[in-house]
Image (cartoon, rainbow, N blue to C red; front, side, top):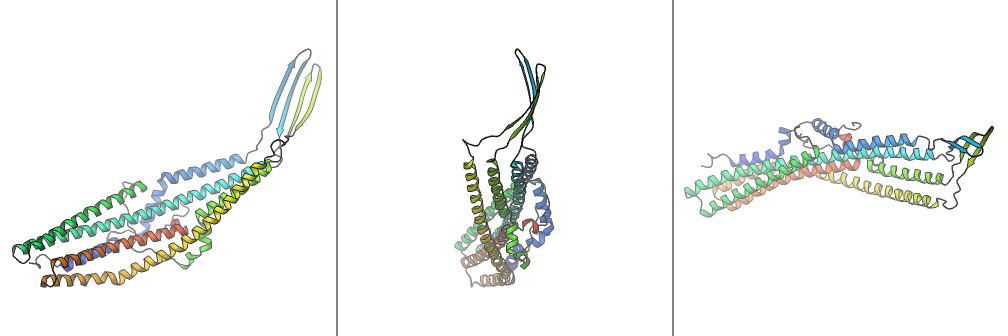
Length: 413
């Protein structure tokens, strides 16, 4: 009767392998993942908002490069016993080159906006990779749960026939039915989780009609060239952003110092008083007596100190994150390769042994179900570990600023 229902060892083996070769059977190349993420980045509202911020910063830089003061034209007419009329032209002179300070601040603003755009792109690409990994793992776990549900259904049918033949008791039949119900619940939970992950991915990607690609089975090694920590840390968007804010604060200090210097206004007037011609020159200089603008300088200096300390703190955090993410990824990758080399193969003979023991009556139904459940949990654990390995890879890509470089998206806007 058991042989007619098929080999349990074959079922368990196929169940195991389905979770591990899924990426090879359905997978696409890394280029497909890169193209998919590149398409998402092009149409993403957050990235487009970042590009608009760059455009705005460029416009502000162009505005900051314009002269601060326009000439003023003045006309005066007075009619009394004598008629007086005059026409004057005056111009305030940017004596301390405040225009240059404004331009420097605006240029730093352009650099900041571009860095923030790069950071938005990298974080979005990394989140897409993370969501893609979670969705892929959820799909593979659903496949395992569905196979387990089918396996327990076949087991319950077989137990029903054996109970009718008197080979097993009512308790064993009830255990088989309970195991089937548990497997069905697990399938429903796995299917629900896959729907949740799919919704999260689609909400982030916004590409309802485009097929979601599959990640490769194994991310690459961290090459020694990629371990040039100092250059990688210097190129990180978060580090560049804090340095840009520090440069902006320094330019702000320079501007406040220049604002302490008054800008003179020079004017020239011509006119007539009855029949006599008039001409005159005026010079006015603001006197910074009641307000010396020292408080503004002190505030700008404090902002500069704050920016410097924040840059130092960011550098420390990014350095620690880089080291931890590289180590964690290496551990996870090594663990997965060990599983592929030995752990996967060790489960196949175990399922065959379980079948022989159960058929020979040396293994009770309870013990058999426990062992089968252990096999299922090990398979699920392998899939979860594979997903964690990809999450660790994404964390290292973020920590090293290599997301777009790895996806060959650097420079694509």
